[in-house]
Image (tube, rainbow, N blue to C red; front, side, top):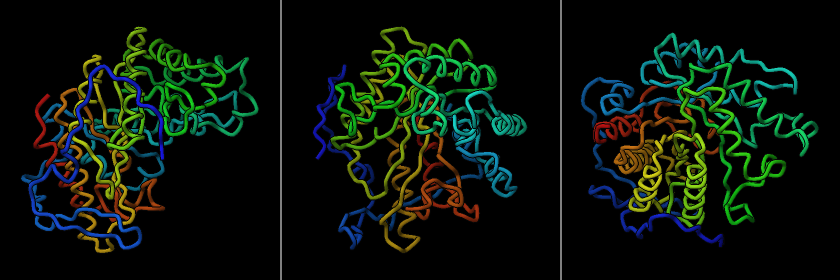
Length: 381
């Protein structure tokens, strides 16, 4: 059992009773996965009807929101997928093609060819372009361990951020400057910071250094801190939200050039511990710091759901709509971005069958309807 102490927050968040299951008024029946006997909720009569033929990007834009998805060059070379992508997405997110290990096969050279292709694709189709991530411990190349140490870590960090951000200066809507710096479930520190090489070599100030370096290299881009495990009313989720909020407060108090929080939102269809009141309180606290909020990597893992596709698709769609119906009530939320668009191309392929908005044949699913309905119901920015 996880026992990390919850860090104090500026505003107390009351324990809410409204959860993922309580946010709808439709009649529900309980579907039990017999393997683990974990309850999920099936809504046999829930209405996922959408009105009109507008695309997701059009429905989002009508409310002052951005809708987009993550993809890489090799995926977008599939013409059928590319057509689907450009029809619905107003933003292209670089999924892997701007990570350290992709653009720096060795310590001395940078290969921007894939990233440049993505930028051209986005421009050609009138989309915004988003870069991810400038600093992330899991995206490092193999040579990193041999070459980077206490003496030269700052030089490598500053050089990388400066080179990459300057190369794309003026064409990137937003950068994930630092990704997943907090991992309360694995950290022995009171601030919850993950024991990354950057923390080991440079201390906690590496985060502020990264943002200041990015701002200098590309002063027009929105600079984002991005993190996970912020969605559920669990010991880890509660502590993670508190630690992230504390980090944001520290960065703002130091006048760090940070503009937004990215919430990954890798949801689980079987997870019922979603507390609407706690999430609203957290979003309000982040917004009170003067920060925007982006939902950056949204998908719904369907592992363990019933084998019946119609039944499992309904549960997944409900997870999308119920989550977004809460999150989009906060007007500081400016974008909803899915981590992939089609089940044919998803990082969840090993443990999920149908986690995204389109199936493997690029046909819309109920999850698409759920997203459209959430945009329709959202307040205008």
